[in-house]
Amino acid sequence: MIDIPAGTEALIFDCDGTLVDTLPLYLKAWQAALQEVAGIDADADWFRGRGGYSEQMLLSAVEKSFGVTVDRKAVIAETRRRVRETLTDVRCNVPVITIVREWAGRLPLAVASSGSREVVEASLAAIGLSDVFSAVVTIEDVEHPKPAPDIYLLAARKLDVSAGRCVVFEDSDEGLKAARAAGMTTMDVRPCSSFHVSA
Image 1: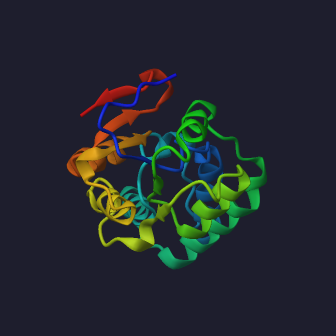
Image 2: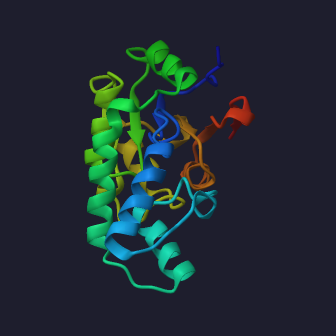
């Protein structure tokens, strides 16, 4: 059981890697899409450390690393299609889902994800949490992705809660930076972190 800081008025959760273990699905989907659309072979090591990147950030890194210009729209569409097709195999992050279920109905809950709405909503449906969150904010809703604070600030506004009264659950450096920049308390949910709390 994790202690939620006193004075907390809302909980906000990243999706990929936090609520659901979609990162292995994304890895395979990105690799296949890049190969099919752009003829690029990106091994798993290349993706390491880029799990919190938005689609556009990842494609900028691809173009820089491989010295190419890719059809971004086509790669993104193919990646999303492949991820959606494999969501039946997705696993939830049990410790985080336990927190969601514990606090549902007691505090307002939101999702703030750098993923696309179509994949985030499909992921929540796959793990039976579609109706738990009062707000779902995705990359389409903001101009600047994580590590900019926009996604988290918008989620707080949608919940009608002050940013300083929100606790964020995240699994990436970019997401943690975004939440801290928004003035929120963070919970690092990566396995080695044991839910490290940072105000």
